[in-house]
Length: 422
Image 1 (cartoon, rainbow, N blue to C red):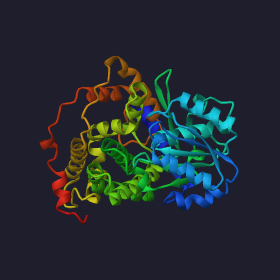
Image 2 (cartoon, helix red, strand yellow):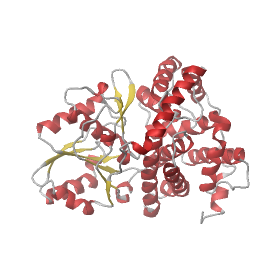
Image 3 (cartoon, rainbow, N blue to C red):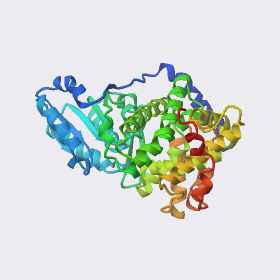
Image 4 (cartoon, rainbow, N blue to C red):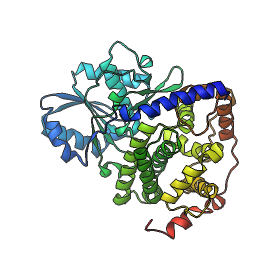
């Protein structure tokens, strides 16, 4: 990146960093289960709410339990159950039509990040009925309050229940973009680990790595604060110590609860300190090929951390110490290497691939352009990269050397398992 553009990016990032203490961040009112939320539902008596979920969850006990709970409190509901893995503009518009048709007054999203993001976008359109989503993307465009939103995460990864962002895909252009406004932070969240019990191993893996990515990018970026560093370090510690457990045994509810808490903390960290190029590239890949966001983040993360080089050695070493993967006596370079190797080892153990086969060379310039536009100048990354440098990363993701599991497990779990109390 040329020096003038680099200086302009850092100036914008510095301004946002200074503004963080004065911005209207807030956390949702949290309940630990549906039963705890009954007093809230009681205030909606004789009203109708829109429930947003996906086709699979619509057939599960979770939706049935939610609807029964609402019914007991005399709350009617209308169900939109067609949310896709990467929510599309058409999802939002179809659900918005139901919202208006049944005169709804609140929205409940039960799912991972997809339905929660979809619900946020529905709320944005309800607040701005005359503006398409394409006019609401970017920063602080949704300045009017949205309808009351309850987020019920069924994955431990996205942190959408506490963030100000909604990520939507325009199916016509294959462009995945973000809507970032404080009004999109859900008013309420129900954090019940039981709702994550049936999450299959593959999704436990990729959503958990998504949460790890949130914490890492928040920690290594230039806009972190004392609080966001605390949130991120605790999230990393919990994820490293629990993700293997939930992958191997979905009924380990202690580990499930720890992962859900970690996801929430990571969400609090990155919604204040922002993310970086890992997310920008993942969004481009998701828009172009519909690759699940958590999967893309998991694959990209170790290679982008390596690309940052010495700029991230110290913070990655600090995270490695926090997670029990390194000690303060080791060098920053070695500690950072151990942390990156830990990510590779987790990916290998959970059968996450080390390359993205879907990438087509002809698509790379467009995806790099989208990634650069999303990240620059807003994301306070450790090392600034322009469109050309991001293109190189897409090529690397397509042509990665296959790494054998026995090589990439050099450090990680031998360290952790010898210190189980860490």
